[in-house]
Amino acid sequence: MPKGKLQNIESILKPAGIFADIDIHFARFIARFSVQEEPHVFLAAALASHATGSGDICLDLAAAAGTLLIERQDGALAVVCPPLADWRKKLMSSPAVGKPGETCPLILDARHRLYLYRYWEYENKLSEAIRRGAKGEVQDFNSRKLSKALKKLFPPTSTGGINWQAVAALIALFKRFSVITGGPGSGKTFTIAGILALLLECALKENAHILLAAPTGKAAARLAESIHEAKQYLDCRASIKNVIPNEVQTIHRLLKPITGTPYFRQNSDNPLAADLVVVDEASMVDLALMSKLVQALAPETRLVLIGDKDQLASVEAGSVLGDICDRQIIHGFSKSFLAKIEQFTQAKLDDTVQNSAMASGLQDCITVLQENYRFKPQSGIGGLSRSVNRGDSETALSFLNDPAEKSIAHHDFRSGANLVHDLSHTIIEGYRKYLTLHDPVLAMSEFMRFKILCALKVGPFGVNSINVLAEQILSQEGLLPRIPQGRHRWYRGRPVLITQNDYNLGLFNGDIGITLPDPNSADDELFVYFPDASGGVKRFSTHRLCEHETVYAMTVHKSQGSEFDHVIVLLAEKDYPLLTRELVYTGLTRARKTVSIWGPESVLKTAITRKIERTSGLRDALWA
Image 1 (cartoon, one colour):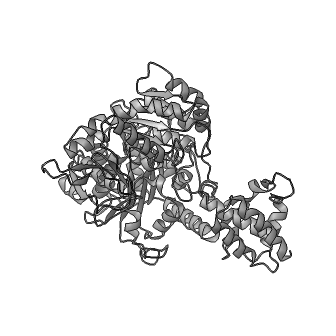
Image 2: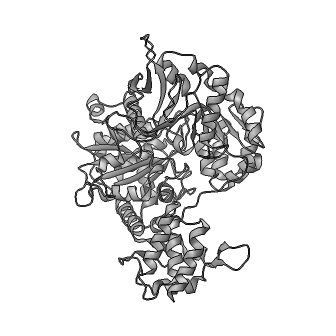
Image 3: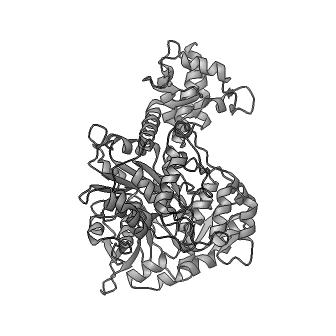
């Protein structure tokens, strides 16, 4: 088409505010691959780039075809996506677009999914690695020791039901790739420790190289603490406990990033020297990072992923754990694998687990931990989280509005003015006690009992506004000193959230600290105290801290991996697309004892019924 037509569509798209500058620049680059600069190609490239930036792995061309993208009030200028057949034909005639397996900037597959090449490659390499790890079984283990070790590490349940932790351990033993998923309180961390002990007892040498990793520094620190605690309760030899590693690294640090590039030193040409790699909080790992991790594993290395498939997906593109687990579906085990599990667990699973036979073998790699050791399944937080997961808003509201349920509540509000009035009492009562304490250990412990979790970052109901509001309320109550102005607003009692890893200081994105003077000094100099692995605190000068922010409230996203006794999940006064089932579930399951969800009933109902659907081909590649 003539060059002018490309300029016309660009002049409409750019000021519309739909696309980021990088989307437009990428589309311009792609369109100029063609002999004649083609608006159809430009539009598809801009949409594919935008989709990836929004969390999708690819653009669903079939869903986009024929949709009205931009409508002007005068009706004279509009952008309508072309019909699918025409659009696909134009794309496949462009040298910038190729089929799967070809090397082109854009890849269009038979199911009308349009990828940026690097994301098609990430998805393809990840699915290949998972299918390879799922196929077949590991035969190199001591079967004579297995039954005895399994029973000691994972004894039969008191109810006589299936011990799903034992099932997960067997799968990790039999398979080179395995996944353990379950909600908070389902015993995921103890299962990790037990698996390590079982593998060392029956399959791995005692000098085996085991690597533990997590997506964030905070998650890595929590896993290290949990493993250290869980080892005390393992029924195994001291020599086995001593080999279980205490160090947990972030995935980035494990793979050793090459500064200034998206690449890592550990890769397919230079794989990790490891017999076993365990990754916790796997729901937070995006497609690109997970793909790079599996490429850095040797063929004989076992990989165990642990996480909650129902939590919010990664901030970056993809919903990898959800796609691997096929979301709400429990496929069950193949008949032969089921018999093997029953042989060693001495439990009958056939009445509970549906037999299924799939060529990939992936159904034999996944365990859903179904017993919750923290919440009763049909009441309070347990019942609420289950109904939210099902998308059953009516049952969720009935739980929340039941006066007999003391651990959960719903607070309706209609405006920002009501919110300020209603939050004042809650903020004062939630934070009063820690602000009266002088001992950093006690103050830190008390502060972590309560948290406001916001769905939004900005706006009157966003985390930024709520943090300012909390400071004002607490200051007016006389619990805080006068709040200084400026970027570095240090004052006694200020809680801070680290937002950038600092390996030199041992502080990680997500760590929370409290600002206090030294209780053993007459000096008023302020320090920030953070919990340490021993149950005490470590302190830092305010001048040494890396990037941070005030944290009376935090976003639900940033709360992942954290737990608090009492939680408020603050939605908004009206509906927003990011208010989803996963966000509500993630927020409410941060609570150990009580949770209150704040927002109009209509907003909460819509959020529970809205499920995150990130466009991807990974699920089809693994399960279709």
